[in-house]
Length: 123
Image (spheres, helix red, strand yellow):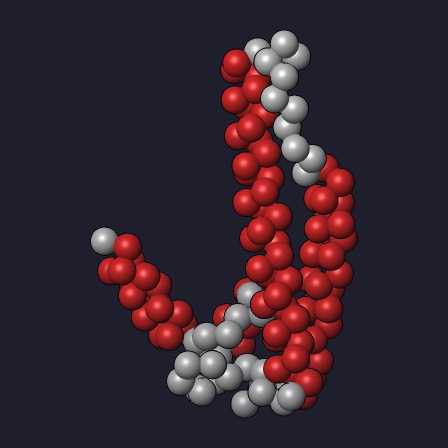
């Protein structure tokens, strides 16, 4: 079981990540305007590059939104005194894993199993 001091540490980390993501997402919405498709203004290569940049930006925004949801779920688990336990097997998640990704929901074994299932379903 994780000590109260460590839980406070992870809560602080999660709150900081939450704030950073909210800041980034607030800025991303301003920057993520639709690419103007006027070929007179953009050459074919420039237009393609602009569209690719926009797609990459949108993917980054979506990833940040998903991480923000995960961070908020982790903060709720702290509030509910369920933080640090795998949502699949209910075993403790290692502190090293939580240090790397404090929002993680699964222990390493369950995460590996989930990823393996995804790989097989995609084949």
